[in-house]
Image (tube, rainbow, N blue to C red):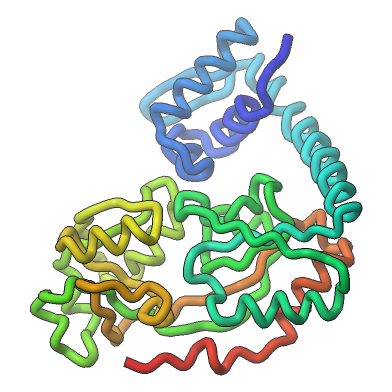
Length: 304
């Protein structure tokens, strides 16, 4: 009997989280899609894995047996895959670097130049991820190292090193009543509709909505987007406003959208992240050093 490892990963998430909603958030999938995958696994195995109730998902006896064995099995499989891909990358002298739009920005070419100096003959393959994949593929083993905005879902299972911080500004439609201000207090934005990342991005979405800095004031969602172009279009068309890194004013300038500094909200942090299994990978370590050894004064200096 062949069982897709993806189904097993979904099973482990539900078993560990105890509810479909928390597991779906952890996996960055919708709850209906997760329910369908669990049912598919039960059908393939011919056993019931969970007892469903209003309080959550309780493992059955077959489910507990599977839950005891599967994490180690998946860990071994992940190790085999990572070693295989790493061997191929070493042979090709290729380092796969994932990134989320707006992470590192000006610093990226400088980091790559330093890495090329340290590792002559090596090539860096930069891979941009959507906002629905805030680890940029690192959590799935699709890349070797990532330049990311912190915090992001799954961060605790990976290694991270902060690089720099920059203020969070707000992106507004050009004709918005607040666009004429030089600095906007965050409290004045609380009742505005926001353009948000997909709900399954969890902590990432919450950070860019500043949910912890509203004194319990509810968030209004005007639109949900997953790509910078869609995000800018939603703002320009008046569906909502959005918090953004200060550097977005340079990198994501667009007619119909203006950026303004915001007071009363904490800054954004950029970091480099890598898998625990790569702690002793000399190539990954060199790239991380290229990031952490740099000073970034030019990155955090942003003018209106």
